[in-house]
Length: 396
Ligand SMILES: NC(=O)c1ccc[n+]([C@@H]2O[C@H](COP(=O)([O-])OP(=O)(O)OC[C@H]3O[C@@H](n4cnc5c(N)ncnc54)[C@H](O)[C@@H]3O)[C@@H](O)[C@H]2O)c1
Ligand SMILES: [Fe+2]
Image 1 (cartoon, helix red, strand yellow):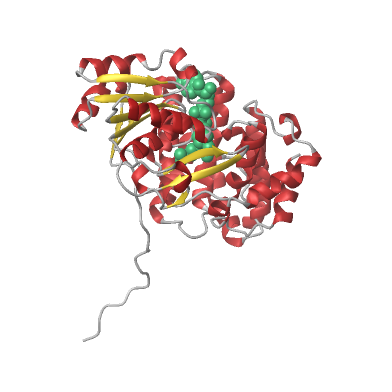
Image 2 (cartoon, rainbow, N blue to C red; image 1 turned 135 degrees about the vertical axis):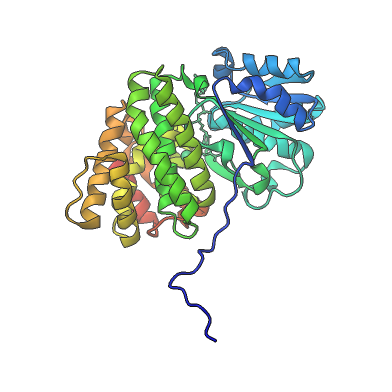
């Protein structure tokens, strides 16, 4: 008897995400109950001074206290957090006998919170865990509450740290996936326009790079990336013209989470690799760094047939009216142009020269970008030092 034949095989992939996602207006009111259910008693809320000043901690802190827990705020996070900030937060958590961590803020706060939760339960040196799979052991209960719609850190196993003078290194480990992601889009209603635009473009880049990720692209990430781009593309102009548009803020928050789930399992590539040195050396915010190099990396990548096909699939999701004639390369070239136009319309800087980068900086930037091998291996087209330099040159 012959066995049944099939024209396809089950795709081979691993997909991991935060095990519980709670999404609702006012979700911070649940924080106390959630932390108590996770067994915490003394909880460190990791944040930055801006988020605290905006009053975004109040509901969460009241909820923790009402649940009989003792909250302690660490508000020493700065953008693109340096290793020293992570170490200071972990030292304070240890000294205070903390047994649960909440990250409440943008990607910077959430990334620090992840490492505090790990380093308190597994006392190793931060410098020993950079890279993929080096953070092993245990971590404290961890809940993440994003206040930007961008990084997706609430559903990624990644934490990005600035080391030494300017290098951004990642700690990647399944242990860094939080127990719970708590989504409340109302926390973003006061997010300034420039931050809204830059973080929103970061989320779009996560979805685009996941969709073209060279080795780990998979059907789940693809579905999530497309839906993320439908939500983000439909809402980004609206949130930038009226920050108090609650429906558009909700679409951005959900879109950023879906993009985060996509790239957590189909990792980002050359856009991020070339963006990081801009954050490291010039303190350009993460989303803006991505935005500045995005169209140029896409134009470079579209020489890859697979990338051109993928961009052609994504183009009409973000830009429903885009001209689809002329084949994949032609559509992808229009896609790159349209993304450049979008970032300009949102009021973001579009040239490296506008953020202080000069011709003489390009060799250093290119050399640093090449250190991001963790990311560059995912790019659909291989990138040499000369290529990196040429891409920066085009973005100047
Ligand atoms: N872990 C990951 O998977 C991942 C992915 C992408 C980026 N990152 C990292 O995340 C960091 C960037 O995070 P980000 O873009 O969210 O910015 P951020 O956390 O650095 O915050 C940017 C600014 O926005 C302010 N802010 C945040 N929420 C606000 C609100 N609701 N209202 C008013 N102001 C608010 C903050 O005070 C801060 O000044 C970088 O270090 C980047 O490398 C991590
Ligand atoms: Fe990013």
